Length: 260
Image (tube, rainbow, N blue to C red; front, side, top):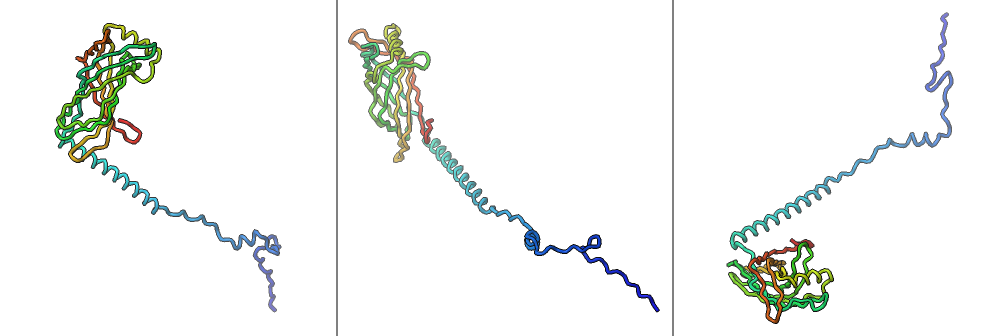
């Protein structure tokens, strides 16, 4: 008779130390969420390469167009310069006569000056058209404290090709009275035998005419220095010394808010 051996059943899974762990009932929220919730995956970054590419292309085309316009303007300017050979107009003080230059009160100056200026256009291919010219006469002093001793103007005029024009103006008293410091300095110069050092500044706007083409108006300033005027002692006007007079011409171009 055979002996049947009975072996114990193997431990069911999850049994620890001979005891079986029974799951909790009902299931908790953590168990439900952990069983059904998918694994977290971060959202993929949106691709913006298309919009960035468009912006880059627009910027490149804009820069290219600006550079092209600058090159075209430079080329056109070079062609005009080579064809017309433009030169600045020149100005020379031909006469300055003082009929009156004296202080009628401690701060009021009475001025009467006759001014003649010669304007020359050396260009044979184009002319100039000038607006009303504002004239300011200064008493020159060391430093930057020049004193205005007269104001005048020259009517608008057209300066033809290869043309020389004589311009005349009567300069009168400056508007308003002088301050006490300026009046005291000027009083000493009026009594001096050497006379008064004078500077003339003319400001206006000019248009260049090349056939039927007219350029936009540009500012022009003419500064004449090296003039010495003497005060008349009687009714006869005195003639200023202009042998050392020199005039400088500055064209003033305005771009937006900047003046060159």
